[in-house]
Amino acid sequence: MDALDKINNLPINPLLEQATSTLAQSEKTMQHVQTTLDNLNKITSSQSMQQLARRYADDAA
Image (tube, rainbow, N blue to C red; front, side, top):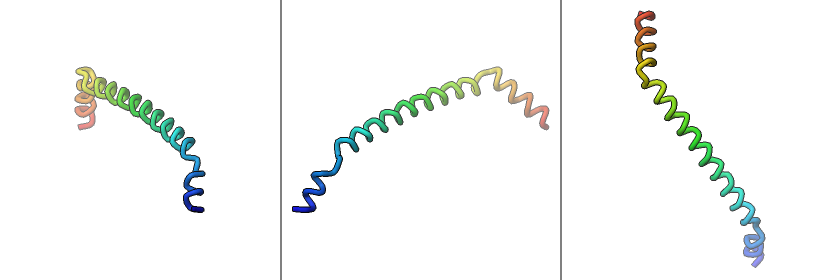
């Protein structure tokens, strides 16, 4: 019974609350990362950026 008492006395609720909070923060971070990547894709695929890349490649050649 001693082992069961130790298991029952573990601070499960605070651990679960912290894990839930950490996951929520991670989700927010990933949403910000996705927004940043979407914006970078828009910038790098824009016509002006493509022209700039071609000019840079021509100058480097």
